[in-house]
Amino acid sequence: MHLQVVYCNHHTADLSVREKLAFATETQVQRAYEALRNRFPTSEMVVVSTCNRVEVYTAQEGTGPTPSRDDIAQFFSEFHNVPLDVFTDDLLRHAGPEAVRHLFQVSCSLDSMVLGEPQIVNQVKEAYRRAQENDACGPLTCALFEGAIRVSKRVRSETGVERGRVSIASVAVGDFGKSIFDRFDDKLVLIVGAGEMAEETLRYLKDEGVREVVVINRNPERAAKLAETWGGSAAGMDELHTWMAKADVIVSTTGADRPIMDVPTFRQIREQSDGKPVFILDLGAPRDFEPEIGGLDENVFLYDIDHLEATCERNRNTRAKEIEKAERIVQDETEKFMHNIYHRATGPIIQRLREEWHAIRQQEVDLLLGKLPHLGEADQQAIEKTVERIINKLLHPPLSVLKDEAKAGPPDGLLNALKRLFHLTE
Image (cartoon, rainbow, N blue to C red; front, top):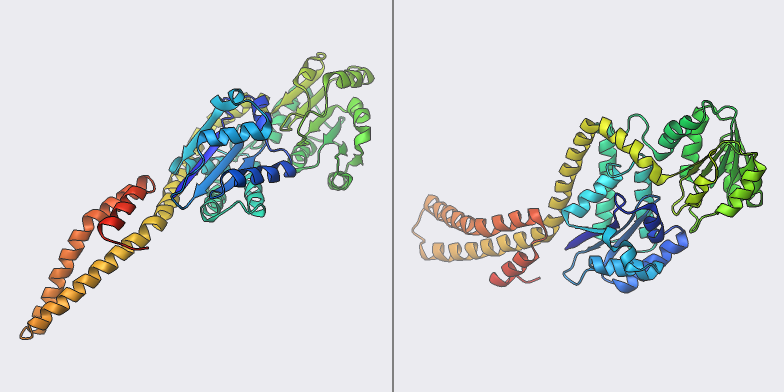
């Protein structure tokens, strides 16, 4: 039984590396699962790809070969056509309890730049749903991701890690936006993209008093729906440059696989805007705006996800006690999960060993008592109890060792040894 995660370390890898490894579209995700199934046909798989992380979870109940860290690295390299040396130092692997603990921390937003952001658990749910749709899940990954969703609910209800600004959007608007503008009620906001992140950002902007909103999306219906919900108007992609020149705040969350705005194009847009201050919040992964756009002039304020790290770290420090509570919950749930998973492997062997030894005990006791018909009922019961205690004492050492081994990991070697020693058949 094997369970692992191989992922790009977002604490050390810069955004450009994560962009190169991300699965930005539904088509890419489907292709990724096809490629993974071809490479690792006996493994369960779940791919988690968000604006800030790229992770591949694999699981296998049998004892066959499992993909190594290098195998997954090779998959990333070939799928995205990215040389290994670009990202291999930032690729980490956790197995067994550490893999479980990692996903539980991720789903509870304890591993996020913005502590307690509620969006990540929805992204975990979405990744799980996509894996199911692509027939990539199995018993272990289903149990793992359902457990992660359950742990997230427990952390939210039992700790205060979500108090205050808890999402990337709220920190971006509340900290960065307010450092640029004293007020928002007179600002024109352009939303590019109509997904969950766009709507969350718009919600916080509305709380700050924004009145004029324009939504642009490749899907006109989604743009219109979001605009109607928040009292704005929708526009087509052909009007993107026009509205960018007019906007005071630009929030871009398209999920495109390459920047939608380059330096020369935005320079032309700035010429139409009279150089007024513009706050650009690039929440796309990969980036929607080329980073050099932020240096075009002193009134262009461009922030992407990496810029949020310092503010998020401050939030994390103020919530140290709540983090400790949440980490204890994660540890408790990890131990419970691993106990249940390893019991699936050890339970049948323990049961068969007990049944076979006690069957032998009963046969021998019956044979003995058949030769001693003169014994009274009390003596017969005493003999039966004595033999039963002997059997239990003989079984205790191997079963105790098996249970102890199972706490640390799948005791495959010990299980195989017990099967051979005691001639236990499948």
